[in-house]
Length: 280
Image (tube, rainbow, N blue to C red; front, side, top):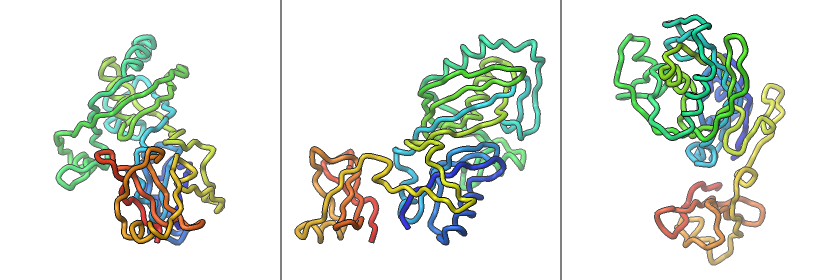
């Protein structure tokens, strides 16, 4: 089976937990997710099945939208509510207008430091392992982009906002960066991913009741479909690169009648399309 499936992950589950559950339910070992969600987080987890696991780094899944709930007055070592409290401040010292000003200032591209409580590896070892051993390595930084921010509410000690971000953005780190700029403790209280690529919560499958809403590549992005002719069959089956045509989309699906044969992808450094996924 070569499909894409969207799951609404519940709180408390790791992304790997969902992979393990679906591996058993769908009786396949070839399945993977296209972007980790922390156990605290809920919402969209896009997954590839079969040959579509190769799509995990495709740019069509990069951009994500989150609903973020921030607890004010406390800061933790993990940057979220599951961690150990390391700093506190009275609520009377919090300035909501200053918070909004700093929040909106992050609508930009910047170098974000990866949190030590993460699965990112340094020298083959997860940062999380360093944290557990009380070792402080030099944390890597990644360029991330915050495309849009929408402030939603402020009530008692909780703030809610919506944010559109690029691949690799850590919302926990963003909130911690805002906390540093404010010189006031903040931490993520709840986090929900509401969109990834073209997928929203309307696309999710109810895997608990085996009610699946499988997607194919042609359902989720623009694809040029070409029928395999006899003069092209040998070339395509052998993965020979093809000259780009003006009307080609970034992905070109070669079919024989109704059967998917080969998915090609534009090479942005040349005038050719190259083999991406073979369905045979």
